[in-house]
Length: 217
Image 1 (cartoon, rainbow, N blue to C red):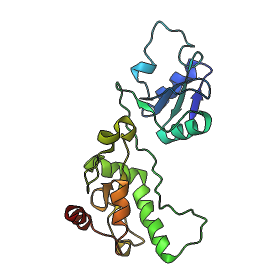
Image 2 (image 1 turned 135 degrees about the vertical axis):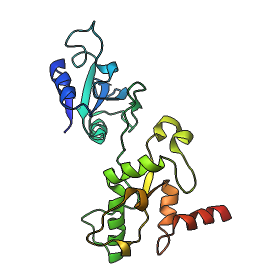
Image 3 (image 1 turned 180 degrees about the horizontal axis):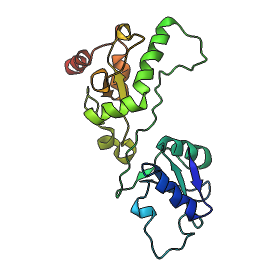
Image 4 (image 1 turned 90 degrees about the horizontal axis):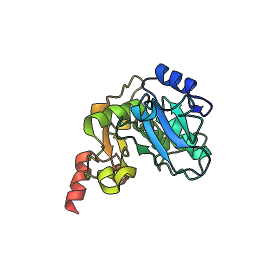
């Protein structure tokens, strides 16, 4: 659950002691700030200034937004910070890693009426969006598209860091009630273009088929 610390440092330090794997966003007060730096809980950049008093971290120019889910912090900034664009600077000392929540362009709203074919898309996309499965998949393959080789960070710089789609390889016919996803065998990182193209097949194209299309063109 998200916490905003702007009234004193004791609660701020207590939270970090109780949430050593959490995230802290250091930002300035007011809606018009454009300063957003993400840290790991207890990073020295946001804890180790012995010359400062107990109001230094949360009651002067800066406030701290804390959560065990970095995407909760991002959502808070979208709502409360007028100049927030989704980009946060990553602290180079503690280098916090997190999986950004991805909204896919083919997502169907839960209350929308849809055909059986669309239900299949929703089912597959649910596996592709599973945060734990995504994390395990990306741990194995990295952030580069496994079809065309696009690395968003190399092309777009810092704003591209931590961005990739994850594709569910198994066909819908192989997914039963007792199906348990294997992130290393059933998921593969793809850029949005390759992800969209691979789903244009009926049945869905294999990774090898899509690579061959790229090679031929």
